[in-house]
Each structure stands twice: as structure tokens, then as C-alpha cells.
Length: 213
Image (cartoon, rainbow, N blue to C red; front, side, top):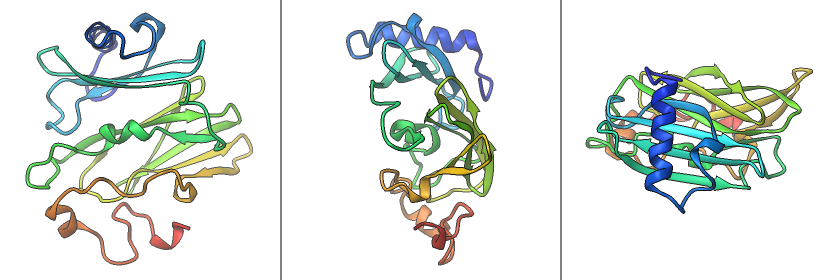
């Protein structure tokens, strides 16, 4: 749980999403466990919640559910069977953009401070995952094949979170900057993002462009 969200709110919100979107999600709310719940990003962090539910059987599945402040489900995205597939030992969730970028902008300006989250799946061989965003690094929580990291931005950024994974010996086994399937820029955030872009050689999140090979 993050940013004031409670387990009870998360479970209630997930149940409402499954009820409202019956047929568009896999299984039932009771089949999923809560990986993450936080205030809804993009609306000043004070209008409803976003909940991430996951399950591993009969196949790995993930659902992201948004519930408005009035308790009405606002949308849901799900991934059935592909969440834990792929060659990379760490797989950042492509739908997590709704957790780390403000998609509803006021003239291109993000509302700060901004609470964000990053999620994805991992192989059993991965024992540590870090997520760097806006110049700060958070250690992710690992939960039976899934990871979740949270943090707070104090400035608007243009680059997506930088995810790294390590094995039990501390060896780097995954770097999102070297993953061709992972986007490196947040969506077009308007003129303000261009104004706030870092000087040449900086990605706007504390990473050097030379590291992005």
C-alpha cells in the first residue's frame, strides 16, 4: 500500500472493477492478490485509487484497475499469460505508464510533488530490482515473480523509469536502457516538458545519454 491507500480500499476497488468490467478481465477479484495500491496519479494524487492485482495460476496475469474518488471504476487494463513471458529476466510492465506519468496534464505541466510507481515481472533468479526515476533510486519489493517500486518526483521528467535487476551474487542481469522493447521517453508532455528538458547529455532523470546503448 502506498500514499494513504489501505488494503481494504484496494480489495473493495478491485472487486468493483471486476464487477463493472465483467468479461473483460480474467477470472474473479478473489483470484488476485494486491501487488500495489496508491492514490490515482495525474489528478493531484487525491482523486481515487489505482490498484494492481496479480495472480500466478493457472497462468501469470495482472490487472490494473482505476477507481474514482466517488468509488466508481474508471477503467482497467489486464495482461493474461504474457506478463511473465519473454527472454529477459526482468520485464517492466508496458502498461505501467499510467502509474508513473501524468497523462492528464494542465498545459503540459505535471502537478508536483508526484507519487509514482513501477511494476513488472521477474524470474526466480532475480533477487534485487531497483527503479531510478527523477534522479532518485528505489528498491523494488519482490513478490512471487512480480516487482513493485514507488517514489516521489519533485520535478517533471522526460525519460521513463530506469529498471535494473541483479542476481543473488549481485551481478547485473538486466538493464532497461539496453532493452530494445522498453521505451525510454515519457509520452509527449507538451511545451512545458521541452522547457524542462535537461541539457544535452542528460536524459532528464539523472541518467547520461551515453549509458543508453
